[in-house]
Amino acid sequence: MSICLCNLSADVALELAAQQKLELVPASPDISSFAADAEVAKEALGEFAKQLPHPIELLVDKRGKRRHAPGAAYHVWSGPLPKNSVFQLYQGVYVSSPEFTLLQQASQLHQANLCQMLGRYLGTWTPNKNEPLGQDVRAPLTSFESVKEFLEGVGRAWGKNNLKLALAYTCEGAASAPETSLQLALSLPPELHGLGILQPTMNYENELSPAAQKIYPHDTIRIDLCWRHKKFGLEHQGKEHGKQLGKDYARWFAARMMGYELWFVAQEQLESAKQLMYIARELVKRIDADVDTEAWPTESEFQDLLDILAGKTHPKPVSFKELRKRRAAARE
Image (cartoon, rainbow, N blue to C red):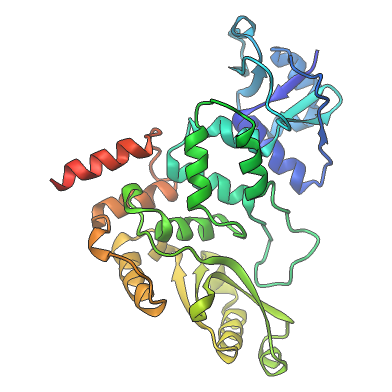
């Protein structure tokens, strides 16, 4: 009997498979039932199992298959599996597809954290974003179109509406988790304690002129968050950027030569509601955004969101409707 990884185990397995460039084969439509045996799972996965979170999470089709066993947790999906919901990882070992894994987590995560997860799946990761894209970049795990198509074929399911909302709030193309966190802090609606600012293009790539290439010797330059209509961008500055100030300044001058204005947002500012709200107020002016700043969350509410995005707090999932009700009641 085969086993199928799901939830967080599937999430980690999908990332590892993508980084190792393992080919995932779509499962046969005949596959509908999986075993609930932790030892079988560990034996089948071999060394791969050591990289998965504890306990290993397995998908089963009947509640009767759930059992108390050390090292394993079981999740039930009764009825036919959605189309394109399972891939084969190894012989006898399957994994939930990226879209199915997102749906599984959609009822387990706070909306902001679900958006972060979706942003990671829609993004690309590179060891050094200041270098040209190379073969070591992890390709996106899915696309907007794939998630939408998957949800259309699911029917009723826990978390489906949450995942639909995440599609509306999350941008594709991020190259790091902090970039997605910055985008969400600025773009999530006030009901979710975000600032509701027009979504940017993530990692917008712009060709450099011969003159600009003299100071930054690359064909193109990428801007973390770019509002192209105003040629304005934000760049996230992690702690590692202190070691590459020369390259950062070169990129800044090259962008200026191409008519783009760039502001830098340090990690400390991304975690400070007071500082980031100040930056956001100036950003609204620069991009001529139609934003009602009076409807913004309070500084305390915005700090709550930043703490969630930074992983400092781990709130339970709350429906968007419930959040809207809470905020309206607090303002009465």
